[in-house]
Length: 337
Image (cartoon, rainbow, N blue to C red; front, side, top):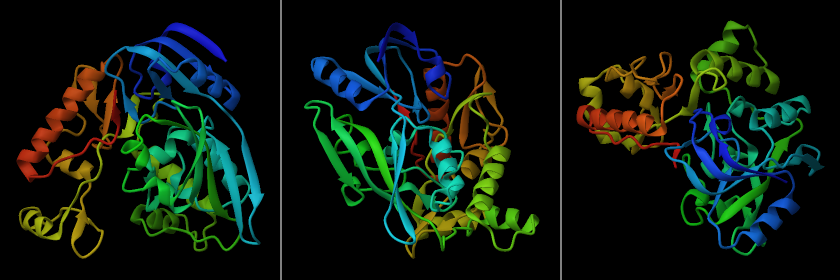
């Protein structure tokens, strides 16, 4: 374990916000994590993994625990399935690539999502018609107060759209140390229904795609639409795509016939937040170093030295405008710290 004081977190969050942690501990094993928890019962702890789904708005005068526990293990479950367990400090995209290389199917649509494995269940990350919950079996977590290990099953996690028990009932009470997935080793069930994937495969004349074809296609799409955090600070999608009633959608469609949508069921419709934001003229606009990405209006960006509060104020301006124009409340997807 490595302990540092007055540590800048600029390199530890994908927005590149320069705030200071009063104490910063890099944890490379479960034993180190248990020791830190047992010796820090009286301190407030902030868990930091990949820093990909947060907006830091202030210095952290608390114990920051940076999870850097690596390791992947596998266990054949049947002729067609394998259980793959990854420790919390594994880079998510590198983990997905590991699975692709070993012909383990189920995560290919989640390629190139930033962050670490340990934070993925918290958000129930998802993209291109696939969510983490679709392959999630369980996760092991440590109780911050007692240090005891707890296993959370898929059902225990109460997964929803970009949501889980870790964002609600047990928020701040556990640190996820490892996650297990059930993936396929053959007869993969491919999810190509998302329009952009279908078109890209058609353009490449790929009729019978492999999981690698799907992963490569998703990577290509994401790179064409989303900025690389190493080049410009961002946290991917800043807002959730709102889900509204079919009746409310009919009213909107009467005024905006070209409004895109995704039917959830007979009573609810999902509307792309990026389209709503673009219609309000925010796409590509910049206020100082805080702005809205020129290619994807759903992404807020830090061009250089924007503060977390400047980006938060921009998000509030967008929310207010969307509410006034469309009578839709945009919910922020990232965690505001």
